[in-house]
Amino acid sequence: MPLESLKKAAIVGSGSMGHGIAELLAMTGYQVIMIDINDELLRNAKEKIKWSLDKFVEKKRIRSEDADATLARISATTSYEEACRDIDLAIEAVPERIDLKKRVFSTLDANSPPNAILASNTSTLSITEMAGATKRADKVAGMHFFNPPIMMALVEVIKGDNTNQDTLNTLTELAKKLGKTPIIVKKDVRGFIVNRVLLAVCMEAFWAYKRGEATKEEIDASVKYTGGFPMGWFELADFSGLDIDYEVVEVLYSTYGERFKPPEGVIEPLIKEKKLGQKTGAGFYDWSKGRPRIPFNLLDTYDVERSWAVGVNEAAWLIQDEAATPQDIDTGMKLGTYWPSGPCEYGDRTGLDSILNKLNELHKRYGMELYKPCPLLEEYVSKGWTGKKAGRGFYQ
Ligand SMILES: NC(=O)c1ccc[n+]([C@@H]2O[C@H](COP(=O)([O-])OP(=O)(O)OC[C@H]3O[C@@H](n4cnc5c(N)ncnc54)[C@H](O)[C@@H]3O)[C@@H](O)[C@H]2O)c1
Image (tube, rainbow, N blue to C red; front, side):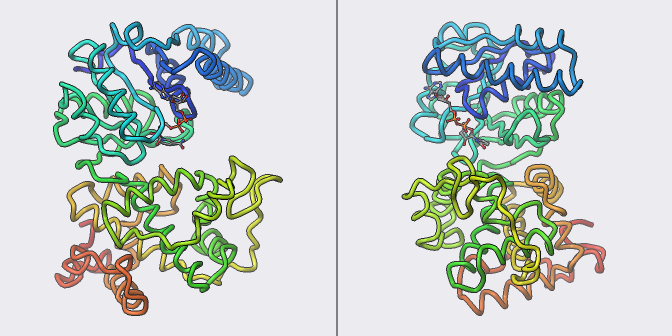
């Protein structure tokens, strides 16, 4: 479907992500209909959109007429039949459970015009499985927005095993029209690009903490103040929600095995105590008085090169899997998580031989899959492709 034919979209699930995606599409001029399981949730979602639009007006980012017109483009219903009758696109944003998502895709398929594209905002689940619940697998893809969708510049567009190029092109163009930078996940791999690299790096920090090598404050201070990352890994885990992080880690562990094995007794006890991070006021840190204060004087107590080595290694795995290009990985990490550098450009700048040495040293010390160098990285170094100094690494 050419982008010009796309006029109306259904957003399925009007929670944290759904209402934001609805607002974004309506601001760009699309007719939007939100679907949820009861009217109160839909009323709340509309209230949140109105609050957000009022803020834009207050800050003089949009005119009040534009806010009114945006709201007028958004309707809501609990009926899939009513919502989907004349849509060109549906974006699903219901809770992260594959059984539920498959049910939703089957219902969307039964109620939408045959040429409508069906997309999922899943953080990590299989697009191919969702597509399998429909009779239009070629028109099913992932469209993964970051939170909050209205502000974050990145969208991962994910190809399922049977997604056709036309569908990918339309969603990529749509992301651009919404003012976002799309990156393409060329294969339906778990964690896609950003969550996969991020979780690998967090895993290294969680293991260092579990082994008693550094406290969470020491790791976070070094990551922020020496590494230049916007948040420490424990702070970030709290910010995203420990229940959500755990769900993603479980999927990565069951897919990739030992490389993503989480250390026992780090996250689960907090989840059991309902300390889920910022949203519950406590997680690794106390958030009751706002963002935790990470002491500056601890800035060199953890070796941030370990984070980089594991991040570069996971990027190499993505490239070896033919799931992403170095450019898209770097763009994803910079726009999706505000990393000061993409892992591929960092690796090329530092020297892929140094990264490989670091990984080998860590692998020898701990014997863990997490540190085992990706064969692609070993191959590059053996060919002399060590990065910028050699004129060839991940990049030419
Ligand atoms: N929250 C984030 O930071 C974030 C970021 C990126 C992607 N995601 C993904 O987005 C999706 C939604 O996450 P969220 O945080 O917005 O969840 P949420 O719990 O805030 O919202 C989910 C909404 O879906 C509704 N819902 C449940 N069953 C439904 C059904 N059968 N039909 C229609 N609506 C239904 C719920 O009532 C709720 O309003 C998940 O797949 C998640 O992994 C979340």
